[in-house]
Length: 140
Length: 140
DNA sequence: CCGCATCCTCTCGGATACTG
DNA sequence: CAGTATCCGAGAGGATGCGG
Image (cartoon, rainbow over all chains, first blue to last red; front, side, top):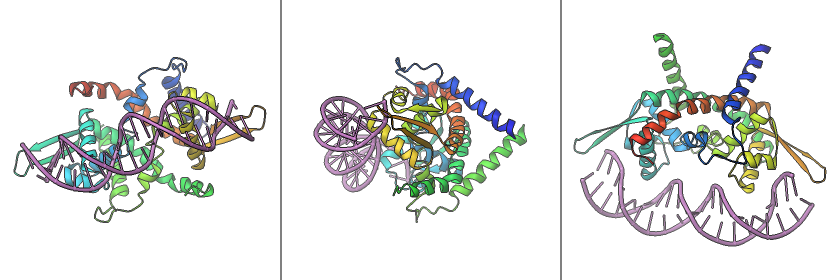
């Protein structure tokens, strides 16, 4: 048990080393891969879109907008375009009248959702702790 | 091999079921736990602060601002306040002259960084794929 | 039905100056 | 050193109307 925790601690440190060890704050890299590629992960809307697509496999524009409630059609189409361009999802348009467009995850997107979900699940499990702390601090 | 992938697929679906299965988009919950608690995860600055603290264990305000390069002192202090209030980090002030303040992760914050790092690492590993896709789409 | 274009608001966050 | 206070600009994003 001790060794497992210890191993985890060590491997975590190694990952951090690999990620940050080479960065010199006096000469910050103008483009940071972590910040760049994590931009999708750091976007609430993109996260929700991907998770809902993971759940339903296939969704049309209007359905998606209903499930990701609160998102405007403008923002939804923006996010979909980026997510498609970065390889997370497929866009399939059927030239019917009226037109039908279906969105679904690519294998890459599915793999990402698996990873994302581990974090989200952990968050959900620990959310009571966060909420309790917030109250103790009188935050809201 | 097939069964491992299959098991993973099934467990992913179960997680999604648990997370979204109860949501009716006609009566969207006014407060969504996923969106609420994920707000820290969806913030680029908070993510970087936590990762750097994971790397260095203890950092003072000015050092932190240097490593999380580009962040203003205003935003840094805002984020630190929230992260402290939600239980991710400790703030220790030493009444010297000039004052010294040290920030470090709580055990909870450490556990979170372990999870966060798995995602970040995956992202970093797969960033070439994302970048390649972007180019193919002529995005930047 | 699927979006794009427009307008317009409003918040976030950067810059700077200042205090315990 | 560790922030707070204030001002201000850019840009994200909501609402709406229209077109393919």
